[in-house]
Length: 321
Length: 119
Image (tube, rainbow over all chains, first blue to last red; front, side, top):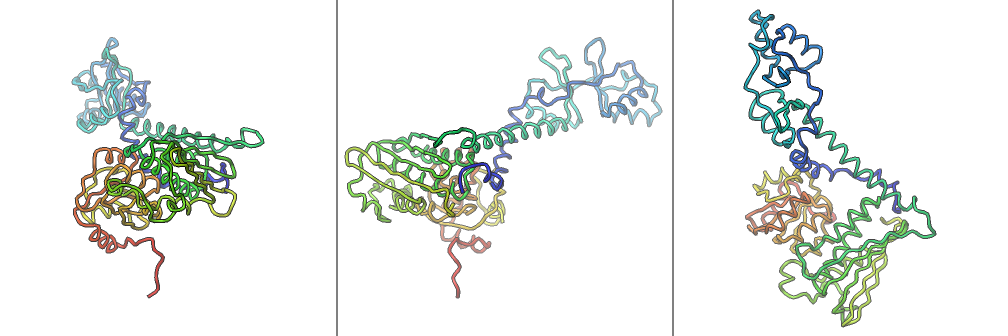
């Protein structure tokens, strides 16, 4: 398998959903009422009759409307009030006498979370939306909220798809004798909180480039071990990824102290990590042998007092992913 | 079986990463050595460990694990939890020892990744 779009089709989408769920919570706080509300508000005059209201609701397929007089919202009336009036034979009654005047409105610049809370608290089907001056600018229903969230979701999903599409085509779109994409990440010494960040970024980059999941796993494991080694044993360094359609090379470089006996360091179980590092679960002496089993080729060169260079090569053209 | 079913069955406390509770569990793995986990745990595994520092989340995320069960009442620090929340990796706290948790996971039908051995 090589890098490219042909592999994106078989990407399993199973691990997308959990991130999307938190996304809903995020979006509810990000989106404003004005982004999802209906702007073309159907309104009625307070002097219209309930029979006329029935026609307005029927023709526009809405279940409630704000009542406007002299450009100001003075009330709301819903289909429930209409039914009650019709039952009591009051089809000719004025809306003015039947409307709710204690109107609960929502501000256009409120977050959706604010609107959701209102729907939970009051059992109205809709809320009029007003601007800072109290002017009616729209109306919002629970349906508007759901539609707004879905639309935003689609946009987000599309932008990730577009990113993947663009990234996975980079090797076809850019013509040269040999195109190589180089990614560079710094690794800080003893930064346990951010440890693994470089590997995570490499993983995401390879995912967008359309690498096979098995290839991504091999490279992630090896890169993580190399990153951890730099973090634990050195004064800092960097991870450089050179991606080509047929091969990925990951280089881990540091500025010392260097490994005195490389052959010994390669032995499974051999570790120079101090006890406190081992207590954190690092320093099992398995890092380099893990790297070896994940790579197709690796080379480790080190000079004491100068630094270490670890090259890991992943062949994308062979049967093994 | 999904993570939330194990949370209920074993009475675990969800400390972070509740977004991942719907993940399907493919098996189990137990170790406190991160490199062993990197080599031995498979995607979708539940990982039982005493470690609760931020690198646990990095390992679980890189391998696509279903979740991490932190045994023996080890407290997870704030950095670990916020990172787990960000990545959607469930961090599940248990009072019991690793041994007991593994036994109870096996009782729920969660097997290890070792190749099956004939009797």
